[in-house]
Length: 117
Length: 111
Image 1: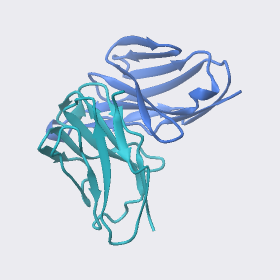
Image 2: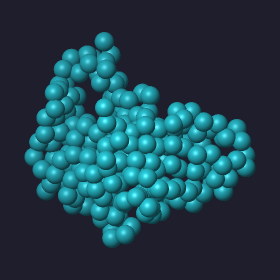
Image 3: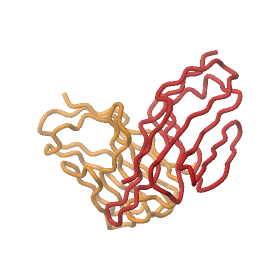
Image 4: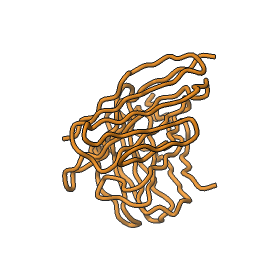
C-alpha cells in the first residue's frame, strides 16, 4: 500500500539535543512538506521540498533543518536552537506544488509527537 | 491574506444524526481541502474540491465559490466518525503563498 511513514511516533528530547524525525513516502510524489501542530492552532509549514535536492523554508523554519537527498525521504531535524520544540509534527506529500501550495491532494503520515524533558 | 473560519468548534451528535460542518474563507481560491484527523493524530484527506459537490460514501462536500463557503456533511453518523475535521485553503502571495489550515471542528458521535 502506498503511503507516508513517519518515525518515531513518540520522541523525548533533552535540552541542547538535536533530534531527527523520519519521513518516507512510496507514492512517487515530488513535493513533500513538514507541518507543526500546536494545541488549538492550525497546522503551520516548517519546510517544503518541490523536488529532490531542493527545499525551501516555510513560515516557521527557525531552529529546524531538512534534507532531500532521495525522492522518497524528507527527514526533519529539530535543533537545539528551536526554543519551543514540544509539538506534534506531520509530514505530507502531494503530486505537485505551486510554491508552498500543494496542487493536488495531500497525503499525511501518522505524525511524530516530540516532548522536551 | 486569506482567513479561514470553521464552525462549530465542537460538535456532539447521536449515532445516526446528519452532521454539517462549515468552513468560510475571505479570499477567492482555486480549491479547498477537507481533512480528517483521527484521535491518534494522523490526517487523511477527504476531499479536494474547486466547485459544486463531491460525495464519497456517507460524506458529502459542497463549495459555493461566490459566497466563499464550504460545508462537509456526514449522513447517518457513526461513532467511528468521531474525529477532528479540518478545512484548508490556499493563501496566494507569490513566494510567500501558503496553505492555511482551519483550527478544526471536533466531532464526537455517541452510540
